[in-house]
Length: 411
Image 1 (cartoon, rainbow, N blue to C red):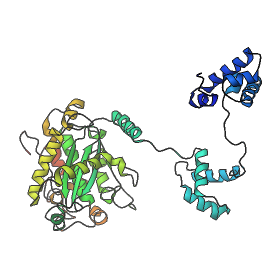
Image 2: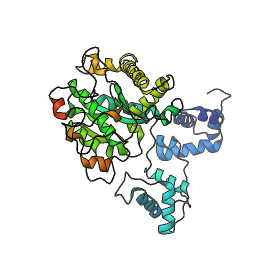
Image 3: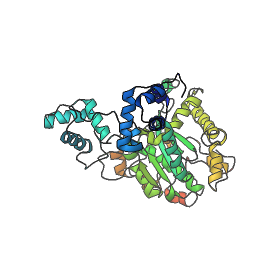
Image 4: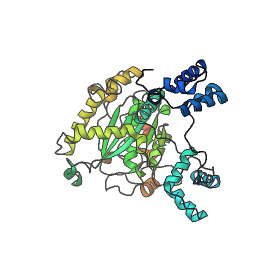
């Protein structure tokens, strides 16, 4: 210890003050237990030396540790009975521990049910002491969790499907409201490889949703993918699940599960982050495509959109993958043919529904309310009389109307 450094300065700067106090105690016993000499040597007061000598004699080396400064008694502490009431209200008496109400609602219920008035800050402190508030995850923790989740996924097996509204884009707003361009963009994106396909529609309905997913699943099957291993994930929009009061699955769900044998899953309500992969694409396509191009008519939009999707899947490197989506598909699957990426954007309203597997009279009356004239087939149409080909014809290898051709150089 330097002559100019006092005991208090040394303790304040020390990361282990017990070592310095032990040196003071050793000096005290070596020099005949002289309190004054020890105080002068360590530049401190006599009461300080006496305090640490007494603690050392009573508790040994443990007595040289700093004692907690927390008060031994708090006269304003919330009684244990009231803390238990707060915990019960938080977890619904333990019956639903994951459904937790906030501090403001607990404050209201305490006042209404039990006549207990507590501030929100007090209730928040009690919840923290009882460990009933889970700390929010940092951004890097969320990224690591997502990375671990992505490692468990199989390529081209988990697809996120969503609809982008085009009437909120200032660059093309006037053309959308005049129906020169469609109002909705259907997008489907593979979570692992970022492979993405899109189509367009004037109407948002279960019919158009069923048309789009049927085109996608038919495209996947034609390239050898096992549809039983594929999951189509959507939000809870009426265009996917139909009416929330319906007693049976929607048309979209039946097309996915019964017609093609895949699986349809929905995210929890009000959690668009669960569809973050396709939501991210909607932000990218707005910045890189819609804000940069001009679209005088619908054919021009479809052509340029096809060009952009080919660029996105074949040429544009993904920063997370460090490669393009098609390179990721080649690396993780047996698909080596770039024609897998040939999925031209189509206008879904003009496509027929194929056969009784994809529609019924009830679907027309119960599930779709805003389908314009000419966009849906007649209720009593049959596979032999309706435009397009039936499911049975396509199973025999005949081309589906509106489906992308699989011949090299097509599309």
